[in-house]
Length: 174
Image (cartoon, rainbow, N blue to C red):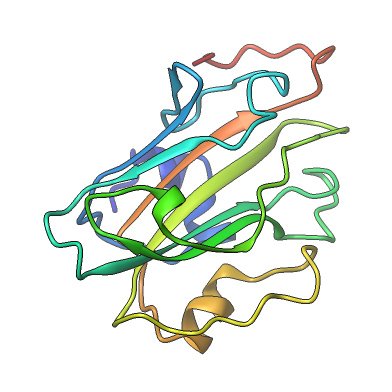
């Protein structure tokens, strides 16, 4: 990871993930809007579950997708870090999240204070596996989860920023 990498600049590397090397494509789309690192869609755009496409050529390789908010309940006091918004396992390579096993259903972002980051993190699994459903969404830890299920470092990640509809901000929109 380079210092100019958007995941480093946006502090996703550090707050959520350890440095890693991207090795597969991850495309997240809400309606017709593709998510790029650091873009800022409005909450009304991200209400419904996004379409997630995973690269690769081997459907016998499986992936785990995690979506978290490291800024819950507010960026200045993130004492619920990380808030788990979505968890899908056993996604075959070259397909999408709808082909996997949804462990925690998608919960749309509803930031109330400040600009929140929402990170999609993709891990390659060693094979199909049984994953226990977390007992709660708040204080989820992506690194610990990866350790428990032997996932290693991520293979891809993308994040966006989001704030209340009435909020103002000078960040790039999707």
